[in-house]
Length: 235
Image (cartoon, rainbow, N blue to C red; front, side, top):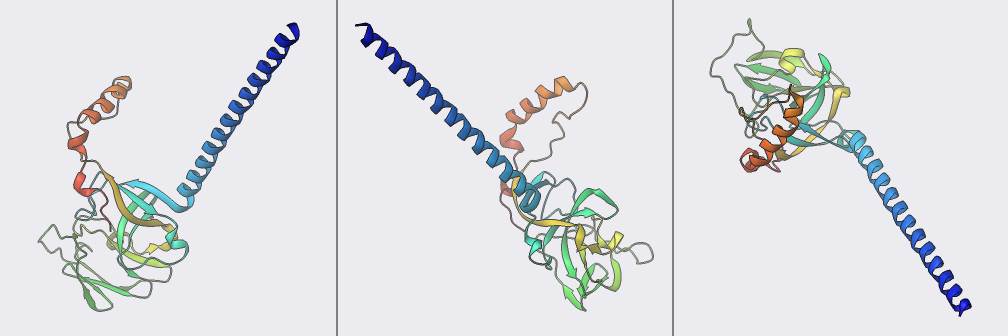
């Protein structure tokens, strides 16, 4: 009888050890899967894709404040920006800031703007779909480059960029041709869009209060704050 009991105890101990080994193996598999996922995410973030939020009005018509855009960072490793591409780049006058504009001319092409009308290599270029002029006034060339520019040839290694909101954009008319080395990627589509809300609580002191009020406000107003018509807009 004692031998039977001892055998039963040994079997129980072995089963317990086996269960622990399987549990440790599962935990190890989970940890490995999480680490692999994190490594892949970091690699994608650094080399392939990135998300940006639009926080200016320079692309209004095509993009609006609150758009969250998906950017392909990999595409220009295999080719140069093309006319019509909407790109993200380091602002030449302050590399800590990122700007988003549209390429309207590439190296070797001649750019000229006459009374708002863009010409490339002497040919008039129509506005991109949804782009616009918001101001009917024509500012003389003596006062501004907004409505008159050039003619100037785009140098090697550079592109000429404009905002789609042509009368309200700081772009190549202001600070010159864009070095292609400053380009981070090409905007592909809007994956989310958040309407600005002047009544929404803003981050600031007292911070403890905002930790609660901001998420609560956004959850309650979520259906109305999402700009549903902007989702998955492409460029």
